[in-house]
Length: 503
Ligand code: NDP
Image 1 (cartoon, rainbow, N blue to C red):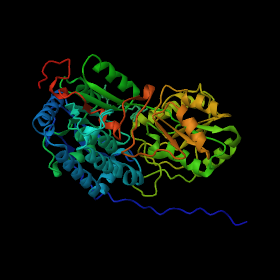
Image 2 (cartoon, helix red, strand yellow):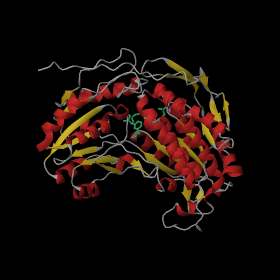
Image 3 (cartoon, rainbow, N blue to C red):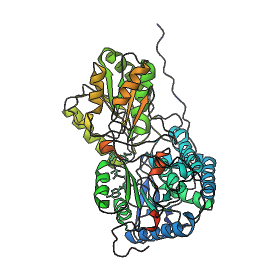
Image 4 (cartoon, rainbow, N blue to C red):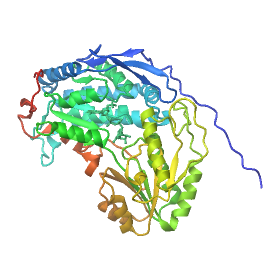
């Protein structure tokens, strides 16, 4: 028999020359970049630990300045502008994002560590699509609220939206937040995550390029304290947050007793259920995509694989074979499947929870893989022999780590899938359409994918049950979070006021 040959890939690096990286960045307030009144922090490339830039850390006073700019833009310009005019700005932003997509993709991969294949083919195209989609809604808001299916309805924007986003899909989360808010006539103050501020700051340049009126979009960089200052600001009408369940709960406590509207998109521990009649090779692709896409830094990742016992051996064997072909390394190489872990802190969290998996008796397996010496890396990993009591079956690891469980009957699959405090997403793999419908209707998850996984579309609502949060982003539903049926909604102050805050 001929010896098995392995074919090495030649390096295929994407050039970073397209990105004009500045050594330092200020805050984007009222249409201009301005120095913050506080200190600065460094943002690094997690694949090399190279410092990319110094970024301003917004203080409470800076946040106040941004909120005032947003309020002025809201009352004087944006809420008064006809929807068809607002749409023109959103279309313009969408087109610029498409034109500058390569620049954004490279910068996203540099700052976040995700493979260029994903930032180029998934994140940035979706950003552009999100703005196109909501541009189309801006002059049809009469149809946006449930029961208001007629053009005579006149829902109103809420006012100033405070938006806090995480590091796993920095620009995509920005688009999910800003596009519907602006379409509905709100203005925004957005805080990107501390480890991934750069594409949001480049987006600020796009706002300038699109001639967006000053103050409609404000970007304040910083850490948790900056986010908290936005949440607690008395003149913010709505908070939209994506991130950890712990911070989501703290935000919910903080706004309790005020009139602020809140949407929370939090963690997940999704079940990806493979029945014995599923096309196994296709399911294996879906399993790989479900957990190794974006290094598993995905709130809706299929991090719990539930396999029907009769096909367990076959699925695991094919999955392991497929995993040996995954290429881990330089995010800017076009052949890379799995990039860098976003930060030292996140890597430590992954290592800690996987050590718990070992200690609790689950069996760990990773393909042989050379990890770079600098930067933050974790090999794609599966744990078999996992039971529902194991912490790796219950807690969000947020890394390239899959916990594998088994089941015998559809009822058992549903029971195990729902046995989680979360409820963001799930996957079902089967040839039978009737089984898809039956199982999907019993799963307590905001999104259920059938014979696919991790598919996103701007027209499709996304959000969770239980500790995965509340409210929906995307589609018509995504507008509900930014509109009120009450014609006087935007005239009223948001509720409890703090000293020093002005309208
Ligand atoms: P966080 O929830 O801390 O971060 C999300 C965003 O909230 C960031 O912009 C963060 O700022 C900001 N923030 C932090 N503290 C506060 C606060 N008190 N008030 C307002 N805003 C705040 O997530 P982590 O980055 O700490 O990740 C921890 C875990 O959370 C992960 O391991 C993962 O399990 C989960 N996670 C889930 C996400 C999801 O999409 N559902 C996304 C990210 C994380 P800063 O970046 O400066 O801390």
